[in-house]
Image (tube, rainbow, N blue to C red; front, side, top):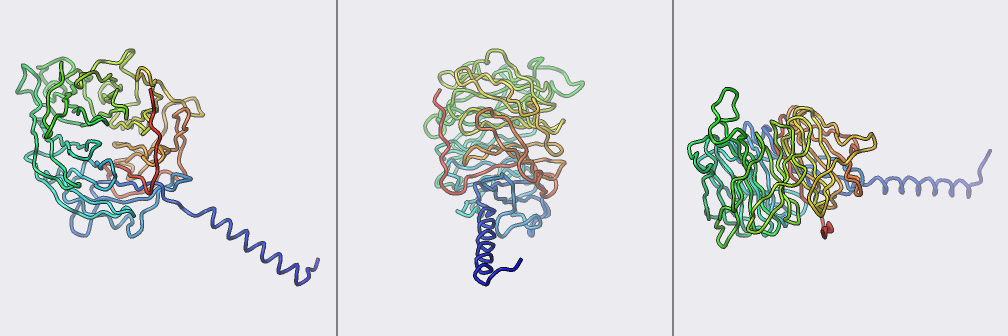
Length: 408
């Protein structure tokens, strides 16, 4: 069949329009920037780097941000970075480097670019860090056998002097070897919580001194000038080997993962930061849970299980804080990742995606959240290759995105 010239021009025009439409539909729109730390080789350091990736708004797929790639990580300021944290306005990033006992501050540009600003040195290796929602204090837990919580003042993101330094000890057992594993501040800026385990009691063949259950969570109310006041009854039992702690955005509940018991322990927050165990707990996880994150709406909990390489998903009862399994289309609340996830984050832009840093998989695994059920499904093209042995992951929104809060 032959076409007239007019018909041919019309056909060419329609094909061009269709191609243009397809390209427009396939444009990648960045919803979040993802920061990943690990022992990555950089131009100025043999190890210790940060990779910057961009998350697509429609698929959750990750790609390296402009100007970076898998071979060009940013120097983290020291070897062996283990933790990342951002300010609530997402303009500052902090990285804890165990290799040189430092915490380094970076400013974050609108395009996700990092610029090193300042740093502080610690007497002991840092284990974890957090920033309060107001962006006025940086909380750092450090030590390998003697745990310490240090509160640093922040001014426009810059790390100031240590406002408070609190040695963490079990009453009656001041010489026990406590190893810090996590820290979390309440969203209302009223309290901070630190998880530790008693190394002398946990180690096989070790002598139990402070308790037969050597896991603990310390609670402190936060006062003027960064002053800390121990919550009544603190420290509280937290299983055998707590590995991570997270609070919900309503400041009513705190959750701790227990690596040794394959469980999650839940607490209700009372006045002055006091904690009470949630009814029906503890709650089953996968094998060797290593990290935990609560979504920005306070509806869901996600736990990274390092031994069985999975993420457990939970739906939070908004009245009681009790988590229940959020099952996916296969009827399971367990979702496979790449090998050995050790850090986890929920995207803060829309609370739509979950990402894990996979230590032995040398990758990031991505998942899409069912906004009603909290269950997960694999994001497009997951997992995403990274440098070797990533240890920490965090995320900031790109642009102006508001996640609606939950009213209990």
